Amino acid sequence: MTNKTLTRMDLSEAVFREVGLSRNDASQMVESVLTYVSDSLARGETVKISSFGTFSVRDKSARVGRNPKTGEEVPIQPRRVLTFRPSHLMKDRVAIGNKR
Image 1 (tube, rainbow, N blue to C red):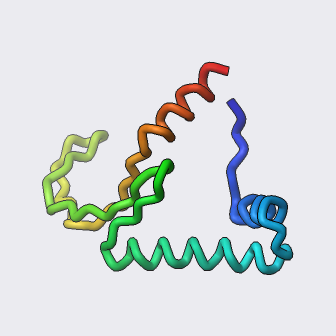
Image 2 (cartoon, rainbow, N blue to C red; image 1 turned 180 degrees about the horizontal axis):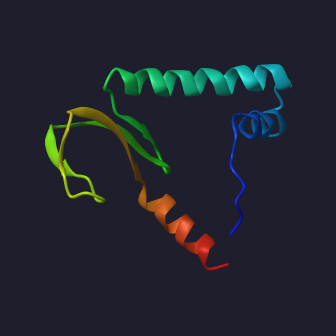
Image 3 (cartoon, rainbow, N blue to C red; image 1 turned 90 degrees about the horizontal axis):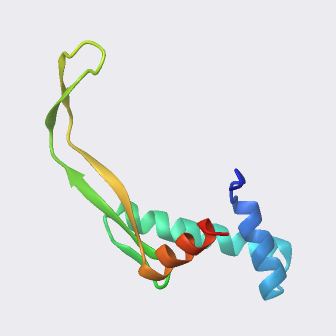
């Protein structure tokens, strides 16, 4: 398994190679898509990308947590969290990749 991280630059380069846009146009396209997705999530909308997965925002209520070192109870404030649920196709593809 590699420790490589996929970056915006990698995505832009892939769009440049696959679609044939200029590097600048490919970079702007990737930025536009990522901005659109993040703005939608910030508004609390669900983002579903077919054959990839679903990003959604969940509201978590306040609760009491515990400091693992001291055992002291600590209040945890309510918050919004981002969740990702991969599609079955993505799960299968990742599982096959692990067996190589």
